[in-house]
Length: 83
Image (tube, rainbow, N blue to C red):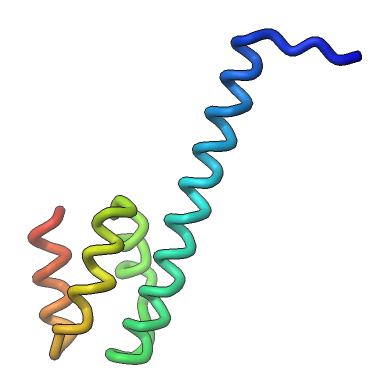
């Protein structure tokens, strides 16, 4: 029988939550990268890094906003306003 103390259980739950959050963020980044790639061409490493710095809420906002972007400059302006 395994004994798990409350602080151990809390640590496990916190780790799980962080893992789920990270997975969700990575999924958002993957979808946005695909959309940006289709709209503007290859997404370079610098842009990928900028996307990784965004929160999930910001990524969701970007997913909507990119529908209105006409140029890559629109994207960069959007990112610059959020950093």
